Image (cartoon, rainbow, N blue to C red; front, top):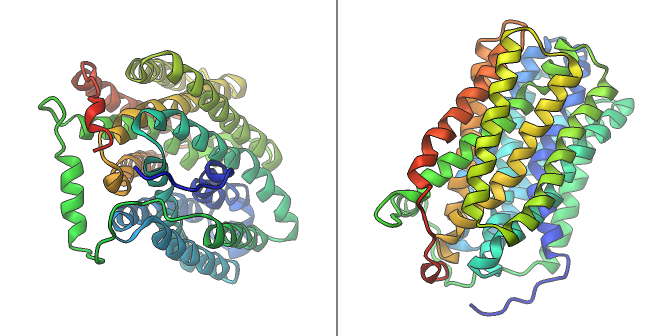
Length: 406
């Protein structure tokens, strides 16, 4: 492939771009009780916007990925970022919970539309054998957002909940200011005319891609999605777990939520070392098994009413941290199966599987909500159970490097 002229901060920028979603979601979580009181609705009414956000974010990625394969990464990124800015500003001026929930879906769509291009740009810019550590680096930078976003959200509440969304406008404007003059178009294949109908064919090529005669790519995507879905189940119910069930304050909630994100960052940092020393597939499988054991322990303790705050928080931190190893290890194989000109569609399949499964399991936990941790724990257990069921089908997989950069 032709050598791209990339700025030295390219991976830092991609990490900040992928963080657009966590910034929009996590800074908002500490404000839920305050917003509910201000708007005169229950916290459950606004909590529904968390799942709405996840669905909107997934929809944006689902469309943005294949369109970026057609018209280029930069055009899709600009459109999504502008939509995110406009809707964030509209939320800050809204006084209706129903309207805010709708605008959050549109905001999420713009964020997903823009941020999905980041993974594709990694695939564009680096050889297949190098993308694992690069993905880990981008994810490590991105995961700083869940650490600081709740703290920022808590601090901005002093000025009113609207200040949180004004901050999101400023953040996205900063990304746009960097993107337009400094980030080159990374898609090096010929651009195609915009065609929404072609999107289905693009996805068919990804989903039906066979490796060693099997639908290994689809299995990888579903396995990663179900394992990472545990993270989204936790994010959806984090406010209830800590503030409602254990009765912690908004400030303590931000700290506990941030500790899980610190675990993710540490795990991502560890994954960059592990992927250089061990076979990525072995790392992937071992971490999924470890996560499953921990989720099972969490569920059994929840059923026995044996969880106190330190034990619950400790298990959650380790369970969530597993995703920081699973994603880079899985992405090394999954994204390496496809040439760069299919990178957007492949990235969308990978990330959307996580958001769809995570939001679905999170919604199930809400539907069966009974004031206890049990429905949440069972939703997590169902998610990891699916990843375990898919493991046998990919354990004998060996990537064929000769096809990676075709």
